[in-house]
Image (cartoon, rainbow, N blue to C red; front, side, top):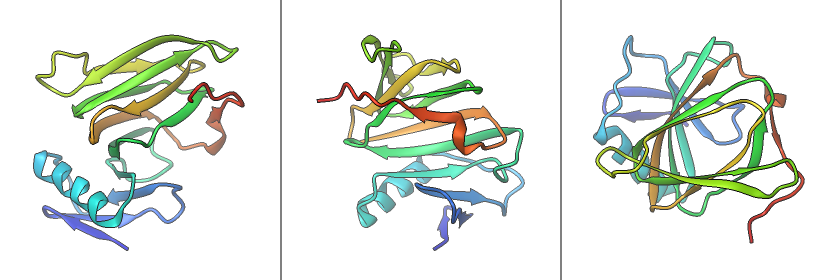
Length: 164
């Protein structure tokens, strides 16, 4: 199923584990509050937990940028990326990021917030750092970026999970 949001023709990525779309019809992809609101409404309608618009043109691109809208309750388990850093830039809501040592002990917790929240809004996580994310508002909207190309085995989850 493809989507059309505010003039963006979004093509579903069939191999993605989450609901992901590419926008291949525009020379410049503009993401504003209307697009984010439409993504939230889509999740409300479908009962989904996460939707992403890929701003890059495909998995082989040298740079991957995504706008991710995520619902509260969808926590990502502790994981790390073996060879790639990633950045989170908050567009809306609050997202807690927890960091862990190799034994699974939480070493730090940081809450990111959207513009005007008074919270940090940009975070870069270096490769090899265990981390997990937890939405603290009904919805979060995040601009995530990382180097490409996509490699399935670059992200590994740990066998421990400190969540209750």
